Length: 301
Image (cartoon, rainbow, N blue to C red; front, top):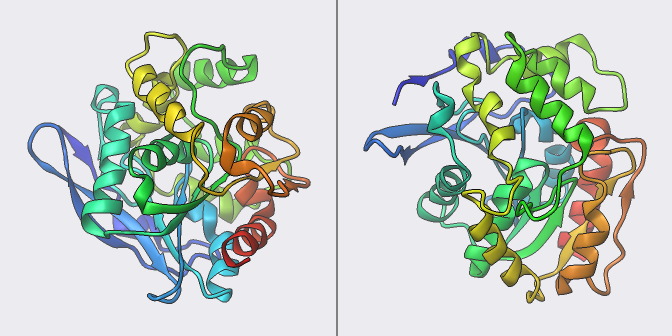
């Protein structure tokens, strides 16, 4: 497996992101090792929030959420998925699969960090990966916060705006990652923040993960990930683990999933599910402090 590793100096000028990464090695399917990065911030003995980002962002997306949670005494573990951020980036789209993304993250969370009693906060692919982890390792999680995400099985079609995004990513000769993130926000993005989303990808060959992930979302019932996702739904739809649905008010991609999650997952009952105002798909970027307060209140209630 040919791997790209972003030079450290690409991350020298990140606004409002002072945390240094820690690295572990996870297995690649060819028998080698991949370096996976994560931020570990806040008190070591505090309750744990596992913050998982999606496509095409990285842990930088959670910076304002981290600030709030750390101030409330919560330990934040914030990985960069393989292919993103400071983690290693396999350079062929075929190197990525839904199962591999789940396994790489599981290896970090379970084998390396031995995290227990965690609160998952998952957005976009962070929810796709995270909800699989919750379903497959329920003893590791005390709570779930689903934020603009879901767990597709391919039994229902994705919205047209998502298909437009997928086609754009597949066909673009050059991918402008910062522009993709900015397009998923409703508030203006400054140049230095946009540059921080571009930082992990100084070369086009580093973007195989960005190109691959939209093609890995199950869009037909016989997709390679469909059976495992259906099995996860069976667990989640019988789970009483407290499950907060904290979607934004401006996400046309995943907005329709909020009522589905509230209806089908028993852990949502009896909770007041907030709507994060004036925020798009990347609600952590648009309203990170607001989301942080929601998560902190849920964890510390």
